[in-house]
Image (cartoon, rainbow, N blue to C red; front, side, top):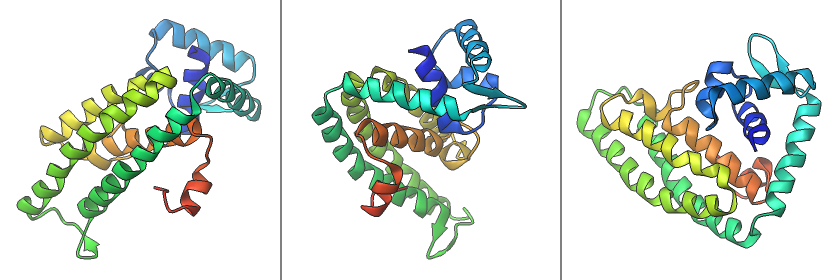
Length: 201
């Protein structure tokens, strides 16, 4: 399981430092470091300034994910993902309204407007929790996502709004994007298929 978690975290983040990998994988730090060394030695990870997947690492990850899906109830995953799509549409609208106002860049100079947008995050946060719980019954790795979303949500609520959408940190949007990728894969779909069906983003 730790091999799958490690390879998948690297895939989702693209390029990742060991410290960020440790933060993203819910396993013992020493075990992660040992796994990274083994995967680098096996040619599955490329270790430069950051870690990234090699072609053989991507193939190995695909095989591990396929095996994981075979052990899951595909109907339960599909049902959870259908519910996620509805919440995802609301989250996308929230992010758009946070970044833009009236078709223009939101300058965040209207506290009431921003507060109204951020208030909607609580509804999204509450609605997505049982969806993740259902999916995690089939794919236990996904049980890490509520904690990650809780952390980002708490920071946003405390007034650090960078934790809503900032890239390169585990902001709410970053974690949400990774969760979306996980659910797409667990449902046996691709991001391209979802975009064509109008469910991308």
